[in-house]
Length: 482
Ligand code: NDP
Ligand code: HEM
Image (cartoon, rainbow, N blue to C red; front, side):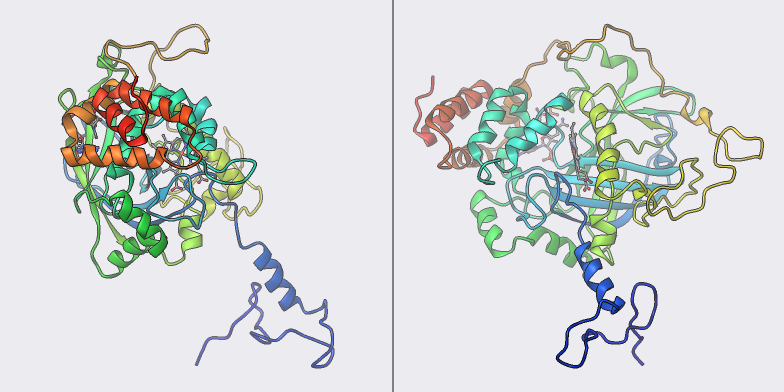
């Protein structure tokens, strides 16, 4: 027998398709609370989409740590042999909920680990770097990638305007303009924590760390033409690919690598190790494999488990901490703030966001509060209520002193805006990669709205990285290289 349908209060539904009326042809009745609930709930089906990274998809899986890194971190999830359930959400950045998966854009790579000591989130991208190094530029940067205020159109002139006026973007825009800016699927790309984080061990010794998640499927990209064609053919190509590969038991996996820098080396390192526009070259800090993770379970309900998933770089468990990276510092505020707005102040009580370890917080009530709090609801108390564990955090403290200023980072020996992008062009990219990169830039900067003056600035921007690169772009755009 088929189960009976109900309204949201569990009352058996009188009908699944007929509203109550005065006679078969008469007007409808306000007393039909079944109809009223159905229509009123429908009107509230959406939460606001994410202000960035709106289009995405995700799946659940498991992290397994295979190496002993207890000399670097006391974090429970990173102890050898530990297995931790996780959620990974992939996304594009600038497009809206219905936008195409294969657009040229960085890809979000947001991990939530449900550890024994609460949730640890690494909210990264598929690139190890970013466009800017100060959070006060973030909303301006995003506005330049989103739609114009007047006609609600995307505008490549606006994008180049922002990038050329902010030369620290050069390294990230270089990645974006290679074919890695259009990955074939989410399974065929790496992930990066991007920022520098702190690890500290049980003795309170600290280290700086960067995370690299290397795809075990291999890197595969689309050419600009293939990506464009796929936008029309299947705008949900990446969401579909992930869903279907997990459904058929072809579980994607990533190797988890870290780079470790002893705490004291940061001060004199040749690059500012906290500058998000820079990598740490492998020759200085090689990658060490510590484990792997696999995605093996699709969500059962996309809205509940993916749309309402709330990732926050501020979810840092004992053994890991932030760093002086100004972008990271800004993000520690931004994500919990947007979740309180987008989902509501008790977003952490939703099943997908709720830790799998005990929650004994003294925060309570608010809209949609679901869980019982300990009684008494204040700390300290004499009733034997839960107590904080300061010993778990010994190690995260470090000395800082200085004037309160508004200033760029002080430069380290080899800091500039173009050097690492130049290394990418000169030493890492193949001839085909370089040719495609030039074509991709030319294609992007040839949009009808890009002005002649802007094209000159575009050529200058790429010439700063390498004269050959600038020359190729100048030729493609039909502009004289200065
Ligand atoms: P390495 O030669 O040791 O590393 C080069 C890195 O680039 C590898 O991680 C490689 O791994 C990755 N890579 C290869 N092809 C591309 C591509 N087409 N687009 C982007 N990345 C690619 O040199 P260094 O560590 O000294 O770094 C040199 C430059 O490489 C950097 O300036 C940076 O631009 C880039 N890079 C560096 C990374 C780092 O963390 N050090 C990470 C990624 C890029 P894989 O093919 O598996 O991605
Ligand atoms: C999403 C802000 C930089 C990766 C978001 C969201 C905001 C935001 C408000 C929407 C979150 C939501 O509604 O759930 C910022 C600010 C930044 C910044 C203020 C800089 C100061 C970065 C960087 C990265 C990144 C550097 C990667 C290294 C992501 C990802 C998501 C996201 C992956 C989507 C998370 C998900 O899947 O739900 N960001 N961001 N952001 N951001 Fe950032």
